[in-house]
Image (tube, rainbow, N blue to C red; front, side):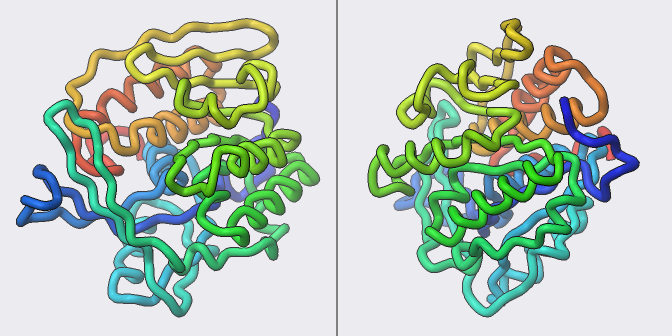
Amino acid sequence: MTARTGEAAAFDLIGIGECMVEFHATAPLAQATQFHKSYGGDVLNALVAAARQGSRTAFISRVGDDPFGPGLQAAWRAEGIDTSHAPLVPGENGVYFISVDAAGERSFTYRRAGSAASAMNGDVDEAFIASARCLLLSGITQAISPGARAATLAAARVARAHGVTVAYDPNYRPRLWTDAATARAACIELLPYVDILLPSLPTDADILPGPALTLAPHVAVKLGEAGSEVWLDGARTVVPAVPAQVVDTTGAGDCWNGTYLALLLQGADAAQAAAQANAAAAAKLAHRGAVPPRTGGAR
């Protein structure tokens, strides 16, 4: 990994994105009568995983000043995530509902249009981004609004200018985009700044402009039940999956991203980091919701 040493940076990992209020149920939404409230968002989920591995993390976002907002910020701070650039602003927070079938597969219902986070724009804090060793970006952040897409691109440019490693998960979700061509264009505009590409296959194949291994110097591919692969310095490393009890697949890939990046930043080699990320993602699968409970590990 080419990131600066810890002594030269205030944060190990900064991420830009939206985190929403989560309500999950154990029955289809039409029949559910009880919901558990939590929170979730792909970049924030990854930051939680990284913080639990001991990384110094920070979140760039906007948080609505509705009744949920202060609780969201407090929950993130309790995980050790800096929220100085995720302020309360006038507006509502996005909300999503998860119902889960017997195999752990999710069904999502979103209420996020016009959320506070979607009002992000390309006016990013250059000094704050430059204070990181690594910046995590996501295709979901690009998708939530033109302003959030602009913020993502601006942050990537700032990171490149200051020698900050840029990690990017395309995280293609067709429902968030008008069409695949628009999502592909957003991916293509960011790839020149990407040092570590974190796709899931085959999910992201529809928007990648070529074979994943050709698109960045360091590519770590999440393959679900098949484990993961790392392409680095011209070498391919296959990392087997860890057996898992699947209760809910929500956030497993995000947990993988955060764990992988945190361990790389701590000096682990890519194969070691991927193996531990596989284990962390498998452990997450046993819990409902995007963010698993603390288990008494690192942090």
